[in-house]
Image 1 (tube, rainbow, N blue to C red):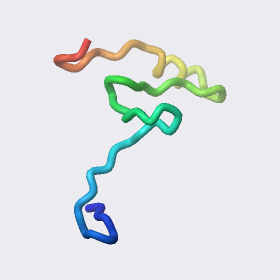
Image 2 (cartoon, one colour):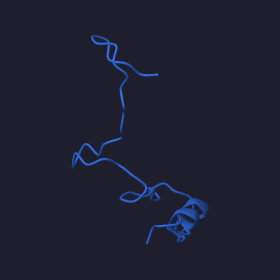
Image 3 (tube, rainbow, N blue to C red):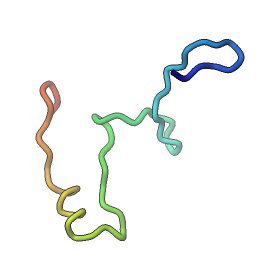
Amino acid sequence: MLVDKETGARADPILVDRNTGKPITEATHANAPGPAASARVQRRLTKPRPQKDGQQ
């Protein structure tokens, strides 16, 4: 559990894009192959993934 050192209150951490200040979620972000990615990694990360229920 992560807590605030001063208050002891439980923290509710999120992952945020430093460039935009927006939260990073599955709905708004995805992994992409980097410049040194192998052909296998490139295929895996560029292949369309099935959508979860309720997502388009």
